[in-house]
Image (cartoon, rainbow over all chains, first blue to last red; front, side, top):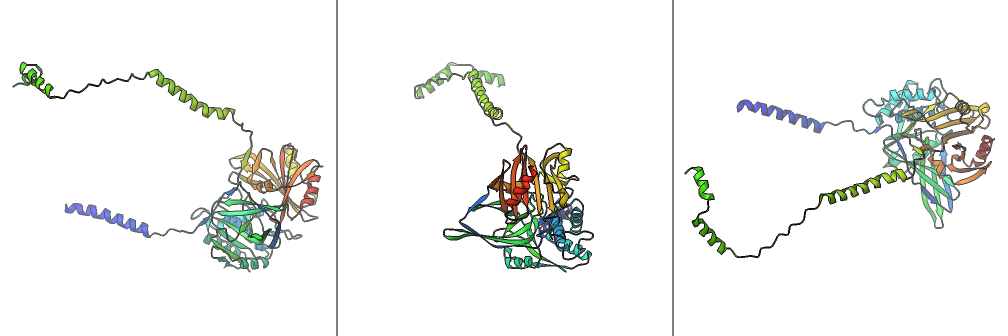
Length: 269
Length: 219
């Protein structure tokens, strides 16, 4: 019996060590931001009103570059958002995107995605952000570090100013950022974004569900107050965002009712 | 005793055994014997008949809706997960001529800062076109107009916002629906021959401008 004791004890010890190791192992729990199919709601919301007031409405000059992933890249939402940010600031910091001007000098509007320059920029971001290396897409850390490396490599500095407040954004800080020609990067879980089509005396709000973790760039703000016979019955406050998808280039991110993981003003100098 | 002798002893009747059995019977209370009315066996053919009828009902309930129901008229709805976008090396006008499509175009080609033409296609079938799209920036006015085209049997989630445009005007006998989007774009949509056209211009309340552009397209 004695000689069998070791044959029993050793495997038990091994099992204990494995179980303890599994219990204490802390895998990387950062949320990943990857390809997230957009699901359009079939039911739109109609808002009838007697009077409507757009109380806030502004965007950065020329709005924001609106890009989308090329078909050869998977889980590229981080790369697309990074490319949009770099192209946005290229207007103010020449050669942030070398050998290319991201906007039309005559109007100040940002260039539409072409077949060469924008895909090249997106692919650079894709690589420098380590897309699909540890897991699908990028983590928040991958994105922030990757964009930092890109900006530093092209001779500039970058810092990120946290503007998440509770479960949403600090709207006043976002207003200040937009008014100072800065964009805000949003890290969102699966959530909805909106479009408001204005008709005569009614608005139709269409929601589109982003079905997984996604990164977007906010470049404006928009607030609507709706009135009926009793006064203001509804106020909707949004950030204007570049969604970074083929099927939806821009949309409205409703603050106070839309889930948010993180938000940072991007400062480059 | 041998086994055979015991067996014989048990099985063979004897007067003694008869007397014992009779005494036992006399002690058993007499009860009315109820006649067991044996149910007649269900005829096999009845079971088969019922089964066949049930099978027919089930089969018809499946087949009839498929054969007599609404026919598939080829309409489809394409979502973001199903298609990709690729740039085209031709303008929409050139692509239309090459492929004999007779498409309407915005002919700003001689006054454009930039023209970007692309095609949406089904990911699993590159030859299957979902939409054509052309964005043109007018070098004189700075306006950016995006024209997208699908065939009348295809709807794409990308153009859902156009479905919510309920304002209307008419251009050359074409009914046009329009609306403002997010207070920074104006949308308009109309049908012509076998295609649906979607236009957006980067201004609010741009319906009059879109009316002019559509009139030019229909020349």
